[in-house]
Length: 237
Image 1 (spheres, one colour):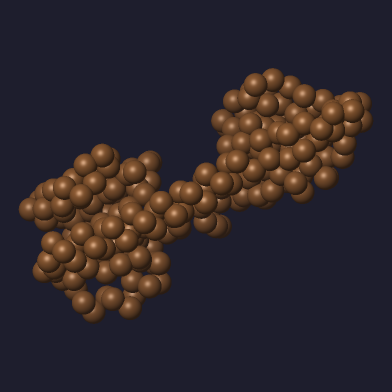
Image 2 (tube, rainbow, N blue to C red):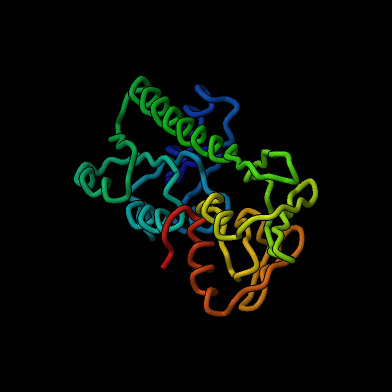
């Protein structure tokens, strides 16, 4: 569990860090002194304690930019500025701690945020375990969607390229596409790719952790849109 603290006052950052460590000693804690530094970090926090009255890019502006990239972070505003309490709802803030606050209040809010994070994480884990049944010869085989890197059509067969090897069966790509869901995309009539395993792409090809897939030019813009949404958890454009 990654918990980030963003405040331009060192004393406040240290106080919040010590409080988090006291109740969740195994948490990975990261400190930021500005909204700019927070947004430059590639790894998004699971829980964020964010001051509104930051110098430069303030906390509310930082939160709006963060939400364009990540809708899953549990956001707690920690501030002395009460007047922004209603604006906080627009960036889906989970809680609003007004300074000064008691240790009991801090502990209670943090516990609620951790509970929210764990609920979201459990949903994501359940999604990872989704599977489909396919008929290979006369036998039905259960395949975890998380293990499928890509699929392609060849000689009326579908070839599933999985993390542990390939598998062939007779079927229709359209049916597989519908079963696979939002984490997959069909960039070309003969291919289906799992966003999880995309390494890089251009207007004619998608490079995966294992193999490649053709990109139809007409599908390129939609692929980019869907892929960025998959990465950041929200619409990008």
